[in-house]
Image (cartoon, rainbow, N blue to C red):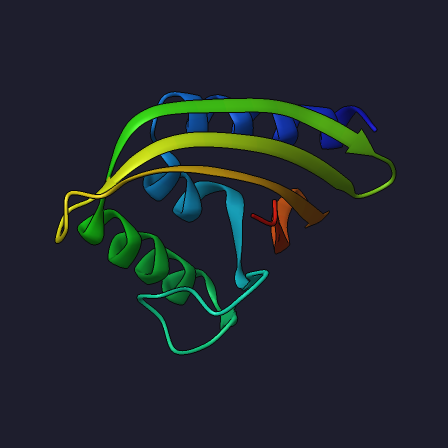
Length: 125
């Protein structure tokens, strides 16, 4: 459990420091997968496969959104290999100027010290 807590804390700190994009390279397995709750507006699909594709997904999102405020709470560990994180963000869509509040929970599965799966759960309107 010690390793799970360590990677969870490193992950949460990277997100709080707004190093989420950079953390993909250091914290994710090469064959990691990301599953969204719904198909995101800037994407064509819910499931993203591979560390480079996950990095690209984050780059696409950051290209269309500006984060005004970000709260990251966790990690909430679930031994032997999962942790959860709660997010709340105030963002502005760059194209429209629309301000939004986003709330979600993500569950991360870890194998051999790397994130192998992230699953996002949204708060319905």
